Each structure stands twice: as C-alpha cells, then as structure tokens.
Picture 1 (cartoon, protein in one colour):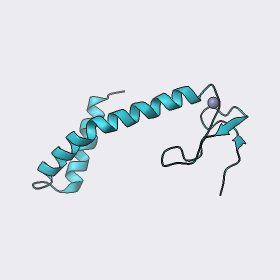
Picture 2 (cartoon, rainbow, N blue to C red):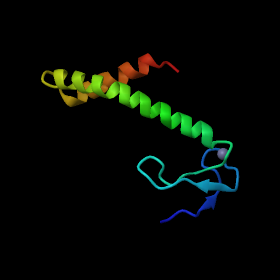
Picture 3 (cartoon, rainbow, N blue to C red):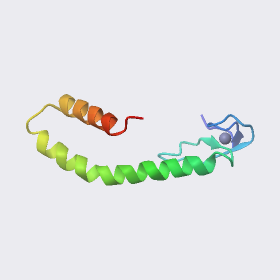
Picture 4 (cartoon, rainbow, N blue to C red):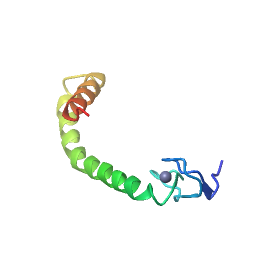
Length: 87
Ligand SMILES: [Zn+2]
C-alpha cells in the first residue's frame, strides 16, 4: 500500500511531514524538517560504520567459519559488538 505524500512525522509525530523517496533504506518514511537532519546524519553514520566493519568482519568470518558453526559466530559477533558499545 502506498503511503500518502504528507503524513505525521515517523520520528516525532508532528503533522505535515513529507514522505522521503522510496528506496532500500528510506522505505517511504515521513520526517518533518526538524527531524530530517538528525535522521540523515544517523543514516550516514550507520553507512560509514557498515563500510568500515564489513571487510574486517568478512575476513574474520571467512577464517573462523572453517572451525565454528555459523550460529556460534553470530553469537560471538553480537556479544562482542554489544560489549564495544555499552550504551
Ligand atoms: Zn519530526
């Protein structure tokens, strides 16, 4: 179902928020002008973190997947990442 062009902000609920273009990460969410800069910055930070970690995690996974099951590696990854970011 297509979302309307104007709706309540998906972040703060303020009415009159415009829909972002549909896309793999935008998904047609509505954000008001007050929330959009922070949302955009958070997406950029997420993209950058993913780009930085992806090659390292890929090499780690390729090495350890020969010795440990995928479930164990996923658990180690999840636990380690949560320890790196205690917040
Ligand atoms: Zn908002």
